[in-house]
Length: 175
Ligand code: RP5
Image (cartoon, rainbow, N blue to C red):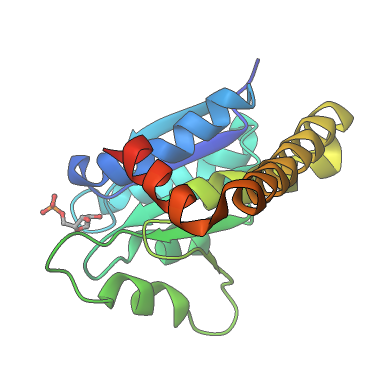
């Protein structure tokens, strides 16, 4: 099966955030690849990678970067594929990666996720892929239904045991 989703990031230090996107793709059985591609340190490789992505069968690129975060925008400038930006925010970082991505000038569009939003980036990629695949669309619909059911079930329990007990139970679950 050919790779449909590309997950790229500027540094190995972004992997702890970006791996969630790969996990979501795996859960939906979407073939994806994960690559370190830096706009600053491997500028030529980045351009070649982005330019070849479409002919390799890739349909969506998820690009994560921190700091000045040029990678998503530069990838988008080298391909007509949809590019989803994940601003990577580490402890002590400001919001620079988010602003670098969201301020993309007119003409080169970028879909920008929340900071560290690699989970939603993968879901967004899946929603794009579902336009061309009934199988993926069914899985995505099912995921959303299960998610809705989860909230309804939680609320039923909340009404049964009250918020104090529910909160205590949550503490127990998370510790
Ligand atoms: C960006 O610069 C990367 O996306 C990373 O988040 C940030 C810092 O890179 P490292 O110095 O941690 O490799 O290119």
